[in-house]
Image 1 (cartoon, rainbow, N blue to C red):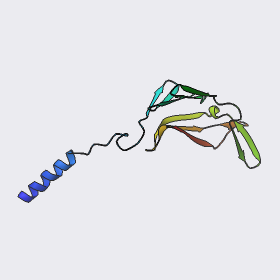
Image 2: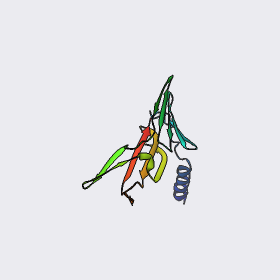
Image 3: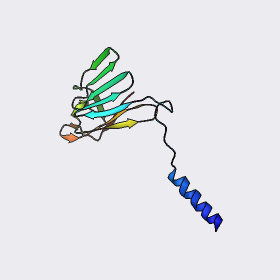
Image 4: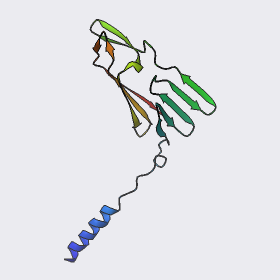
Length: 134
């Protein structure tokens, strides 16, 4: 009876004392915070901040005092081919746009999923994934 009680007590104590997960800095990863503010996604690191505009996919980067602004999506962003037919597409014209936080352990940011383009009145069977990370 004592043995069974000891085993039961040990099981109860071990199940309630879950180990605490170390922070990103404790295991050597960059401290990155991903937030959404309306149509804008912000990836903020210790020294660098990246912003993405969901509507036109324009990106701006702020690193210290330096700032870079990349133009948004435009016609001809991507050319796709099926058989002998080619189609020139604008990335921001995708009818299905999903942006979610992305964390691969060694990098963090956002994952962009684009799909639902049309060409000559038909929906293309195409899905594109992009990541923007620090």
